Amino acid sequence: MRQGKRNQNGMNQTDLPGILFRTAFVLYISATYLQTTMYTQFAVLAVIFVYMRYTALAILLLLIALNAAEDLGADRLFHRSERGGIGRMEEPRRRAGIGRADGSRRRAGGSRADAGRRSDEPRREAGNDRPNAGRRRRRRTSMEYHMAWTEKLWYHKYTFLLAAAGASAAVSSLVSGDRTPLYATAFLFAARRRYLKQTFRAAFGVQMGLLVFVIVSSTADLIPDLLIKRDIIPIRHSLGFTYPSVCAAYFYFLLILYLWMYGREISWRDLLWIEVVNWLIYILTDARMSFLLITLLLACAYVCCCRGADRRIKEWLEEQKKRGSALCRVGTVLYDYYPVFLSGMFLLWCLIDLAAGGNSILDRALSGRLKYTVSVVKEYGVHLFGKAIPWVGFGGTENTDALLKSYNFVDCSYAYILLSYGIVFFALVMVYLVFLQKYMRRREGVWRCLLLLFIWSYCLLEPRLLELQANCLLLLGVPLLGSGRKREGAVRYG
Image 1 (cartoon, rainbow, N blue to C red):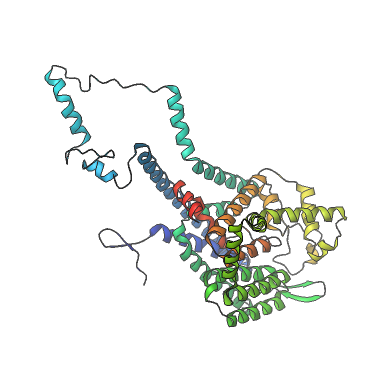
Image 2 (image 1 turned 180 degrees about the vertical axis):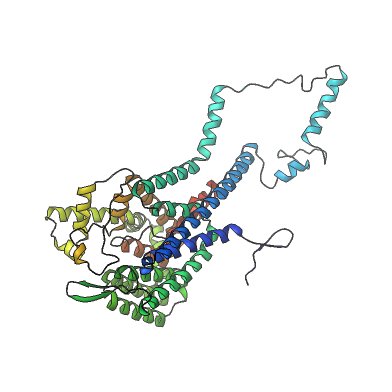
């Protein structure tokens, strides 16, 4: 059994905030995961799933309050030390009276109060009983007060920005009626960097167990396996989920999480078995997008991890960077702003489909995703903080033909966030993803940076970007959201 950290007395110290965070994360992803299955047909279980999510939110709010108090206290201590010229190692010495920051010494055991009383003794002997009578404190001018408050506000500017981001997520959740932005923001603010490794391990175990559990439940007829028809495909199995593509999406993100944690240890035999499972899921669900991307991902894993090509690519990139290559600079910009480029590319596709009258070849290749996106924009528009749009999809029923006329859904994550949660929250998400890309490029290798590109590319045609029960790697930007010093260190040394 893994022991906790040891304190100064040598006793085991349990990381209680980390345990609370993992508990909230497991509760949330378990409840949200099962809400996308046919277990929601049982009314009692549906209520239990809702209360599990609320319990997770209550734990997250407690952790956010504790983290805010910790960061504020640490920033204030460092701020005082910098203004007074006293380092962290000199602070205990100054308090004990052993030494001062300027090198002068004071009698051990003496305090500031004792020194003040000793300096006032000659004045009392002279008949002046008022302490410090000869001193005059200069009153601070209004300009000095203004500069002091400006300095404090600027020092905590990131705290105010994060508070504004949280408020925007809360408003978007209330306006749209969807709590996904609120939960995603709460998990980002409540997490700490030291939680991530164990959190990802717990998430992988929970996701794997739930995926197998739901598929086995549908096979054993505990929940229905919806059979859905599409064009020339006679039957598509949902495997216990509300729609066939949901199962394929969960398998896709589960594979990316596995390759993120254990990609260096994988062999070509493991990749072959994963491709067999991918082929079986494709035969049952006919989820083409996830099948093609997983096949491409496994090919990249073989080249990068099994053949070690990512190290050679990294060496070549570092050489090109030293030379000041224009190609390296362009590639850096393309990588950092890749999610923004994807959003712009999808917007361009929609404009092309609109010019073609909603019947372009590109729209037919994307199963009508462009046409439905344009129709939602025309009917509901784009708002500052989102809008409560009555989304109508094909999930949860086998009779999709009856819902074809009333179908109203957007599969692109970027368009879904913009339409449902508003312009402000969409801009915050884009800024977060750009900073995450920059942070990962400085910190991680070529292979893990490539995994992030696969995530953003898949979210172009699937609305899973903010769904932490699938895309838990969204928490990788947690070091950028800590206190001021932690954040600057993460960016500088990342």
